[in-house]
Every structure is written in structure tokens, then in C-alpha cells.
Length: 463
Image (cartoon, one colour):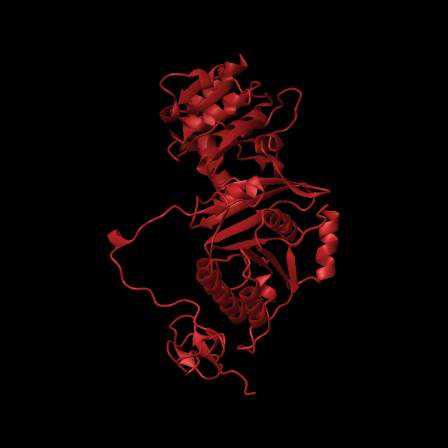
């Protein structure tokens, strides 16, 4: 049988060449040609080769007003925290890409979810390209999954995987991982840019045509980004990142793209002997267990998607050398340097000759600017050697002019703090409630416009 034809396409200008060239003949860019399967010349053939019917017919052109918009039906995965990140559950024909460090728990969580779906009388298929069927069975035994009827296929050839999908017609299929899958129509090795892109495109096309929900497991680079072409994230409907320290028992799943739900939602899990278990009250794991308030600690009410969470911000200010260090874990380092300058100019607190270390407890990563005020208060508390009052929380964005700007959904943040027993809140004036309702009973709210006002209130609370 003749080898399938390939062509090389420039990723910059889409110019093609029958062979690889170092320099693109179209735009002149270097090292931009990527191997791609050539289109079959026959009308009855598609890129999966002969014998396959077209996956999806051409759609007719319609006016937007004439298209009926229906609510998307969702199926629960049996993992409430995973359902939260997905926007309510698995969507028929949806394609999910989940990435994370090796050993973080991707395969464990997906095997648990597939077992729950199978027990709900849904056909589930687990395609493993990195392990044998026996290894998957051993993992299931360790997780306490006994008598499971989840179908397992140890295969990495795309054409055989799609043939199995066509024969079994599962409701949900997991491909673990997309970097191990290859197509015979390409000569490059599995995991290459061309193979990952083409295999993901065919699996996505199959999901849309058949209604089968497909979950693709993706490798990550040393920088924590999903390996492969960036177009991989554009193809799929949902992109999830598995975060957490492998030395800690807690894991976070964060949605950075979701066509069927909110982005930046997070799910919190605890790794146990029986697999991953959802954490219903994640604020508890991000708060320290100090018997009494300690200097350098301030509790922040942050917002992850639609979920308000309480996270402890810790700061340590110590005598520095000729070149003082600024180090942050879980927070942006550049923003820390900016906040220290604002604290000096508008708060009257100088740290130019001090080492400043800031940490978000529990390994959580905070990217929203509403953490600014809590960071400044934790730094000031450590520098003064005086703890903030017991039951104290803060949130608010700080500008370069020293103003304290409002944070989104401030009322929900205050309700979460009051529910967990906090009694004192320092917040932006624009977030101050006009009237304290029953849900905020026991919470004293101090609203400020500027950083110097916040410093003065904290010194007054000490007295």
C-alpha cells in the first residue's frame, strides 16, 4: 500500500510545500512549516481514509433569529466539584481538555467519574495510551472501584480508536492522553505538533457528529502550559487545568475556557487512599489554625468564578541586605513591588531596606487585584509586629494614586465571611452595604477610600 501523502504548511501565511523547507517560500519566515495530511483527491474520501462516511453534513445558512436556542442538557459526573467546574456536568458532544503535572491525579479523577457514569447506565469508554489494561485495573482496585463495567481500550492509533467509538457508541469517552495518539496519515512521531493537532481535530469532529462527550488528557510543559499547538485549546469546548503541589493532599481544578459555563470556576479536591474527594468547604483548607492572631497574617475574601473563598495571606518583613528581596508565592511578584511603592508613598510605611516575603496559604494562586488591600495589611502587620484583630477580613484593589477601588460582587464576599464567623471587615467604600441585613449580623464593616485611611483604622483597632 502506498504511503499517504503529506504536505507542509506554513503556520504564519498558510503557504504549502511538498517537502519541508527551513524557510517558508511564501512569507520568508524560518522554521514555520508544519507537516499536515494532504486532502484526499476523491470526492468520497475524507481525511480519515477510504471506507469512512463523512462525519457531518454541510449545514444550511440560517438567520440568527430563526435558530432555536435550547438549554444544554447536562449529565452529572458523580463528582460535584468537577460538575461545578464543567458548568453543571458533561454536555452531549462536548470536548473537554484537561491538563496537569504528572501524578497530580488526572487519570484517577477521570476513572472515578467514568465509573460513576457507568453505574448511572451510561456507556463509558476509557482509552489508555500510556498504561496497559492491567495497570488501569490495578488503579481501580486501589481506589476501591470493584465490579466496574467501564470499557477499557489500550490503543494509540487514531483509526482504531475511532472504529471502536463507532462500534460501541459510548456516551462518554476519555482519551488518556492525546499526546500518545497518532494517525497513519502522518509520518511524524506521536506527540508532534502535526499529530496532536490532526488527532484532536478528528476526535472533536467525531464528538460533534455522534453526540459522544470526549475528554482529552493533555501533557503540560515545564512552564505549566498545555503541550502541543495552541490551536488545541481553541478546538475544544472546555479547558481545565489541574493544579496543586504533589506533596500536598489538596488539588484544584480550574476552568480557563468553557463554552457551556463560567470560566475561572474552581473545584477543590482532597487526595485520599480511595482517590479524590470533593471539598465542600474549601475556605477551611486555605485558613491557618492559629490559636491566637499572629503578626503578618490577614484573611482575604477572594472570588474564584462564582465561589467566594477565604484565603489567608501571610507576610514576613525582615531586615534586608544591600539588595532587599521581594518574593511572593501564589501572588504576582510584579504587583507586590508596585504595592510596596504605594504603601511607602501613600501609607507612610517604608520597606526599602527590608526583605518582604508574601505567601497565599494552601498553595492557591490568586490573580485578582482585590487581594491588594489584604497584602498591604499583612505586610504592615509584620513590619509593626502587631497582629490584626481576631476575626478580621479585608479585600479591595489598590491604585497607584493610593485609592482603594471596589471589588466585584462585594456583598457575596461579605456574606461568606459572616457565615464563617468573621466579625470585622475592611473593604472599599463602594462595596459597603447600605444596610446590614440578617445575613451580615455580627459583622462590623469599615469602609475606606484610600490606603492611609485603612492604615489609620487598623491602628485604631489595635487600641
